[in-house]
Image (tube, rainbow, N blue to C red):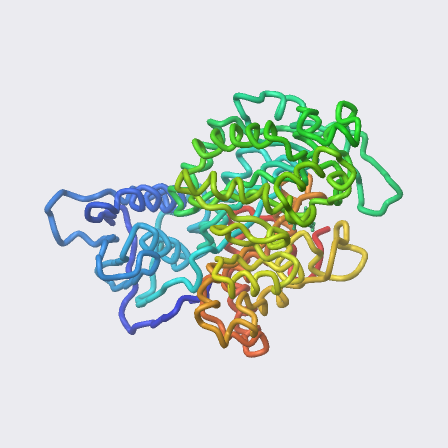
Length: 523
Ligand code: TNX
């Protein structure tokens, strides 16, 4: 039935389809109310049918039923459609929700609209689907720092993730070019750090700037709303506050956070370039306290176990030149600046652990020694992730060579700002999160808790730019993260996936996704 991502088992039975009409009921036992609510809202909007609960205790109405079944895995589900009913059963709410997403795909592309084109002719083919995800972390990173993405667009992205059975939104909330999360104790983080004077137009365009101020931020209530909206869709929002590099916006707001004995931090502004920035945090006690205070507020908003603290691309020149940083190295008896960064992150590893949370960071956090409880986002390829997994650390595989969706999806001059490698839809479909080096070692391989596609937004000013980079490749990525595809990329059924994509584009159209057309860029 052209489901994407492909389910584990799919059987088209010979029976008559299940027909929906104004009398069709939607009901379920205790614990299913949340999914019922979502399904009634989504399918009710698209079909114009009430999908009411029916008379309590009255059997016999043809309906959609949701059932929790303690023996099944939490994220797996079984969907059985006959002429009489559609039964979705699962071990937990998450499984029911993914089953509900499958039901929507079975109803056809118009089931993805927000108002009905028609009120009859809705049917579900007679099928049995048994399904469960390969990975527990099926993530997407949205960089809302380089370009602020308004709240409404983030909420829409959560709907798009849910439609593809993706379940982690990694929000990159702070960077050199913008601080996007309201911190009540330090209002200048957004007041000053939330804005920049202009943006760089290309990476190597001779320093061309657009001369337009850019900025914006989410209030704490906005983020609480995002977290709750995500939770209703079985998505965890993992916040990222990037330290000790990628922090110029914070230093522009509070110059005392920077290496004042090396640079005039008072003169720093929220950065207007892209790339790796030399202006990094200092390693004073006061800076640790500052970030503890920031994180106190972050933890109040985000219930996620994992909190991402970045750790990427922190140049060490200022620490090398700073007497204060060098004193710190001596006082702590460290070998070098890498160990100093490791010490900085270990501090927060412990701090988070004391609060029942866990640190995750980019793979540079391995340099100078990985903090004991830390998990790793392996982005510069697989090797850091392999090393971390072998050392017993959890890993999210997101190698830039494969799943950086800011990179162009075709060669040629028509693609928007040609960043990075060419990575086509087929390339993403053939991405394998567990590399050969880990396949002989099941204990280490089990530490690959999932995979993530990253959308860095240097060159995406608004949602339609994000749509173009993200889709259709996110559909292929979702299948890699959810389905059990052959591990050998060459063995994957690309033609079969392409054929199913032909049924998926109309779903994306109905959702209003501005994806890259298969035949080339949009006019
Ligand atoms: C590297 S991935 C970065 C980002 C950039 C990205 C552009 C990572 C941890 N750091 O800051 O946006 O490349 O592709």
